[in-house]
Amino acid sequence: MNSLTRRSTFKALAGVALLLSATACQSAVDAQTSAGGTSVTPKPGGVAEVGVNVDLVPGNVFTNSNASITTLVGLVYDTLVEYPREGLDPKPKLATEWKAADEGRTLTLKLRSGVKFHSGRAFTSADVKFSLQSYADPKWNGQLASTAKIVTSVDTPAPDQVVLHLEHPVSNLFDLLQTVPIVDSETVAEIGTGKKFVGTGAFAFESWRPNTDLKFVRNADYWDGTPYLEGVHVRVIPDAQSLLAAVKSGQVQLARGIGYRDAETAATTQGLRTVNLDGAELQAYVGLNATAAGLDDPKVRQAVQYGLDRERILKEVFRDKGYPASLPWTKSSPAFDEGLNNTYKRDVEKAKKLLAESGKQLGEIPLTYVGNDQVFTAIAQIVQNNLADVGIKVKLEPVDSTQFIKQLIGAQFPGLWTTNHSWAQLSPSTLTVSAYPFNARRNASKYSSEAYTKAADAAWKLPSPTGGESKAAYQELSKQLLDGAFLAEIGVVFEQFVIADKLQDVDWSRRRELDLGKAFLT
Image (cartoon, rainbow, N blue to C red):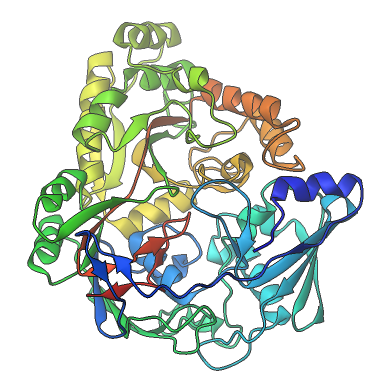
């Protein structure tokens, strides 16, 4: 496999454009090691039973906003490139080669041949053009839509060649290409209804029964090899204890959305294991509506920051499966700075002083969260107690998952909210020009700052996410996030799968999308 790193790609633009060529590396593995340490030969057959705690929201398929969505996208769709578990050097997927030119304003991609949609139609460059344009459509709420809109035109000179023209170079172009699912133009209208999801992935969508289940069958013509599994059955089990019981009893072989305490319990059960989704980190946080009474004062927002007991939340709720943070960046991010990351440690006296300096007489502030999610229910209760110590009264307001996502996307939270975000494990600029909580031009906090927008744009327009001017750009971006204090990061954490030992070779993408393309049942 021969591929040039993205950093090298854009450095090469100063001289001669280099052709990146890569071929898919495939190796037949006759014997693999099971979780129990024994050698297991993969055999085709069987249906994997998966349990998730939230149902599919078809209109949000491009948002990566819940476990059902990332399960469906991972099974049904492919992207042009993918990132390895560590680093930001793209690897081939539906695109096998790429060449940049015009100082990063043009990217030519060679597409994989012989790929078919689940309908039997051949995948071509026209599908890439359609998918990128669809992702940029506001109706789909794609979080990287701002980067998709920088692609001013898409040429399709041949069925296996596509040329992207950009308004200006961006440091997160490959984040976009490893995020946008390649969709079928003939059935895309049915995505919003939940009737059809047609891609080129390892499994074909069969059916969805709202609040009940989703079914998938293997794609025998999959370009990366026919999956071992005959299919995947995803059960929607919103109750946390019922989901735990289902995986412990063997009704499901993989559970998503089990709380961290329950995952610890499950891991002690014979035949089960708990897996951290390394490389696909999440960040738990408390959001603040920067236009709400009281919270419109940065001193009050900073008082909230100093009031949070991050260490307690990490220990009690996440069972130390992560680390506290004042900023969104993971330790592997080029924007990570240990000193800045420790800015907001719990300091009740300092929080009280800031509150007094603000002169604000605060009323009771609502704190919104998903009520059937035991993780964020526990966080909300701790936050309520933490802020009471500071002198800030908080009213807990649980809502269902669908309503919560609607409020997040629509910037409709009346006061505080708590959930997690992703994207910080990718190029730093993706977070601050794309993600709902952070987008400098429109975010869930309704926070606006000329200095923050300028810093976000500077990081976005870097020729590469690493090296060169990036360190100074990220320091300024971090400074703006800390000063604005419109998001109170709690910590970097890992989603956990609870998996039965009989289900082997489970994988995932950097966006937590489930990959069962090589999985098998023993």
